[in-house]
Length: 206
Image (cartoon, rainbow, N blue to C red):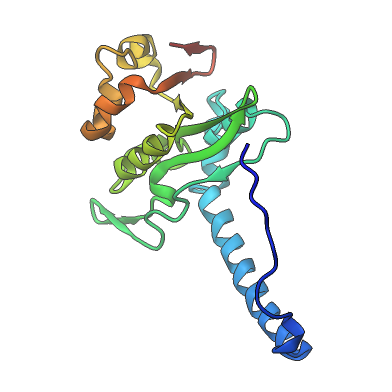
């Protein structure tokens, strides 16, 4: 591991800022941090408790619950692209709809003591349907995964399609990845990948 020596530079804070100004700036930052955390929580909630309950009623875990289940105990979770599509409404047959996080979760965490990139369609947002910017967000996560990390794909296919998962995620076809990005297809040929097919009765690894 590289050693980076850190030495203080510049002048001490109290030589150019008084305590009143420090307190004022601190309050300003705290206010905006609180707003940022509220917005993160809003995105994380997807379409709300109703859709979480609907997912549980099907005997399934939400995408966030799946991430919690596979990460190492105590491992940090760093979301990537949280505010993709933030504040944007889309017309769906005359009905205005939002897509928190573009309907997909992309996070950095540790699994089996190794840093990984996890990509999971958010099944509390239109059951994980794709939206504008969904494929771009997935591509960005894949590019991060190429940095000597492992890509975990948590998929939630319809029950009728679950049996086709080994074909969908095979190295030969990669149909699902092709939908995300033709550009990253060749690059991912040398990347470590794990596809987790999440169903109510079984989890299949390919």
